[in-house]
Length: 149
Image (cartoon, rainbow, N blue to C red; front, top):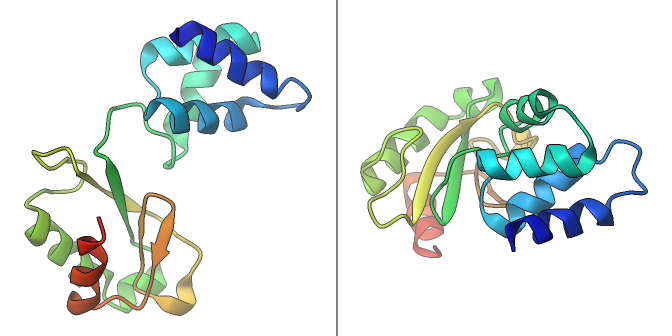
């Protein structure tokens, strides 16, 4: 079943000149993360060296090669966010969830990561949970955001 899923996804991107990133995003959306077996299958069906597929999968921060929690919290650490208090936001997230950067909560509900920039400097400090960005964060706003998940 896994191999059939990967084959189907790669076939959907045959018209793209360089489909690797699109395929990896789609596969991750379907399977949750990009295991070694998955990367090997993507390399096979795109006729690419495994080293290239692995290199791309490990370079981009929005691609995961390890299993993560149900919700991935990414705290922006860019200069504008840092100046506006992202360090305080990070400390607050760590305390509320009881995890550190790179860890997942015991109930597998949250994983915590840093990201270099979310592109929303005007609403710094900001975090992204899954695909949704939250800006102008304070401790109270963070509590409200986390309760949604």
